[in-house]
Image (cartoon, rainbow over all chains, first blue to last red; front, side, top):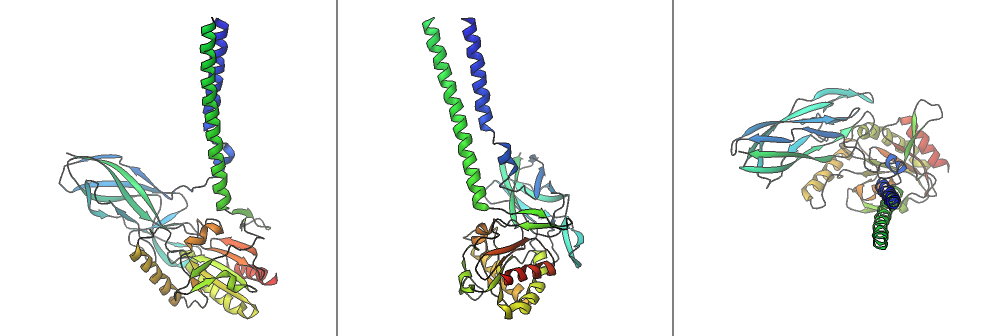
Length: 167
Length: 211
């Protein structure tokens, strides 16, 4: 009887491993990614506590992927798309104002005469928010447009998830 | 004893169902992923013969250019089919794209140089990638920007709007500028993504005219 139980246990474990393995997408598929990684990543804070009903400063930290740049909030050309942070209505938290860092002035090898105002690496946005009392899972939005030395990606909006506790 | 055996068989049967469900799920996702990849048909960068630079190889190379009919800045529909018997450069661009701005004067110059030999450029504006269909003000602004850009750059060739609607047929176009060179028979003979050089563009135009 013991032998039977052992054999059954071994078979069960094998089948579980097989089932778990089957859930993993094969390496060949993983290597051929369909969706590119975002050019900008929201770093932190994940959670903030603020006095309810009072404008409160929150510093939002972001990182631009290596080798890329995004336009600053005040780009140097009317056609360029500014980096912009917003909070949609109806989330229990209102964005009073946002203060953006000045852009770094760069020029690219293909067009040395043109000066661009951009963010690279890590940058912070100072947001002044007003929260109603309670817990609010806010999905802020960061709109940006990224390029590298030779090409540009379409404008994109990423979510900026922050758990805001209004006390 | 007999009861235990029945229980064991039942357990094994249930586990086998789990394993089968896992395999079926994996197979389903694999097929979906392959379908998506096949639909997107993204190109890849391969080393150029000299070895110093990378060439963009599109899966469309050697295949008929996907057909389209898009509205131009005057509101008329322009189709690729109406340029049959001409060599055509389909240039995907946007006003927010710095490298596109750099290459546009080169394209204008080359278009004027080779027009008499049966060459034309179709500029395809992909301005509104991030715009919702309902965002009328956003689309109007995008169109106005495209019009201003075309005037500023003195673009003499047709510029078509809503390139996003056909970008998937041309490989997804995650990056701009992107150009496809189509010969007189309607086949794609070369493609490029990102800023290259005026001489590279001219080489591709000559390829399109030669076939």
